[in-house]
Length: 91
Ligand SMILES: [Zn+2]
Image (cartoon, rainbow, N blue to C red):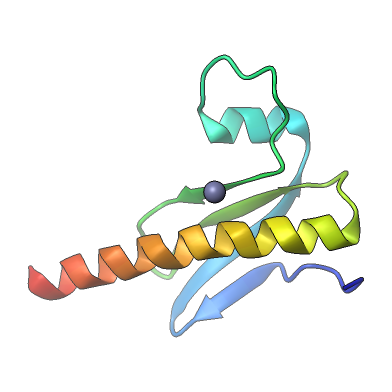
């Protein structure tokens, strides 16, 4: 898949932003300690409407790998959105 990643994913009225980022940014947003390892991507929830959070993908990856990382992080995003919506419904 060579197409570029979407900048935004819409799920109903919720939106998830998609950002291509440097390792420096990925390290900042990932908030994980002592990483000498590289980050391929990261999901950062904001728990707000309409933008629920942001998926960061390493800008230097190949197009194919970007899609792989994008879908991996999107699954995390959808899981968090599901949990959040379910919680909101019971409050
Ligand atoms: Zn993961």
